[in-house]
Image (cartoon, one colour):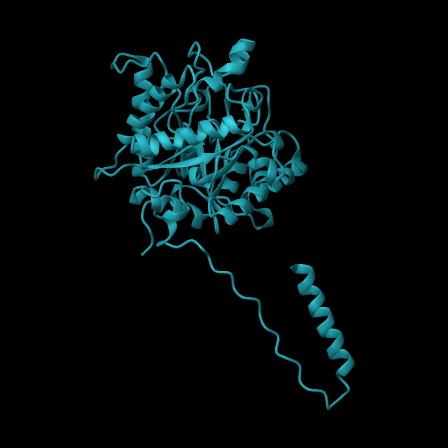
Amino acid sequence: MRKIYTLTILIGLSFLSACSGDSSASAPDPVTEPPVVTDVLTTQNVKTYMADPNATAETVALFYNLKKLAKTKFAIGQQDAFSGIYNNGSSAESDMKKTTGYDPAVLGSDFMFITDKNNNGQTNNWYYQQEITITDDVKEAYAKGMINTFSWHIREPNKDESFYAADMTAEEKTTAFKSILPGGTNHEWYKKKLDKVASVISNLKGSKGELIPIIFRPFHEFDGSWFWWGANFCSPDEYKAAYQFTVTYLRDTKGVHNILYAFSPDNSYSKATDYLSRYPGDKYVDVLGIDNYGDFNNQGQTGADKANAKLKMISDLAADKVKIAAMTETGYQVTASVSPIANWFSTYLYSALTANNIQISYVIFWTNYQDGYYVPTPTASNAADFKTFASKTKSALVNSLPKMYELPK
């Protein structure tokens, strides 16, 4: 359409030039401005674009507000922000708040310990204690107006011990994912895991008894093969079937209606057709995500541009499908032996998230550990760089989030 429009203008200009000296020539038709494209998403039709048409009011509002937020800002988050503290520092505040003065806008959590086979629900059980810590953090984040997301490093179904394919036999790698599908030998095992997930999500409640919305991204980074659900261990149709079953079981069988569902491969896809090769369908997905560490690993602006092109791809898909686009994981870990990259946050990451008019709703950094950090603490040499990044026009910590759980009047 752009070429046709340009050609029309050129022909029109040529005609005007040829006739400009002819006083008898009729006046040209007035130029008609192209129609203004209105936003298709409204507060009235928002449910029609969601994976769960029976979602709670707060969950509907979260979808709507995340979609609208991306027009002007992206929310900044971190995995385990309240419990992942660098170098055994004080856990009274998130490392991000220590550095910037404000908590992140997004808290990332995981169902891994919650669904662990060793979680017996007893108060003296370490895994159950982790469950309580995680759910308490979710409630705290919600009370502060933050957004909650959950990943799931689910253990493989044979020994129920590891989520890494490297820890499995060749036969286990070949059969594990297929075995959790309907009719598979471990399908009931998987349903019990989902029962636990459903129970936990259904008991996440705010101060008024309302259900707390979460964003759930099952089977993430599936385009790689480091996890047992990776591309080498299941076909596209098998992956879609597992994802679809997960959504329908939680949504329809268990009646859980406070979830937005995220589809989040790693960074291997640069074309939309490839990105959608394992996409389970619009009726099962709310968030189009991408995890990307590799493009930011000492690749400078070249890497940032590669990352931006991939984010542009999902941003365009999200605009077309009326979904949310997000960078569901990223970061560059600094350790005793790995130094920070100058201007990594304020130049490279920020340009990747904003160039080419893309609309990304949120970005999440991975966990700060004792021996390394993704978000710098106040004394770190790149703390100023992070503060600059967090204060830029399109950056949003919790203090600059709108009310995410209410639809605008």
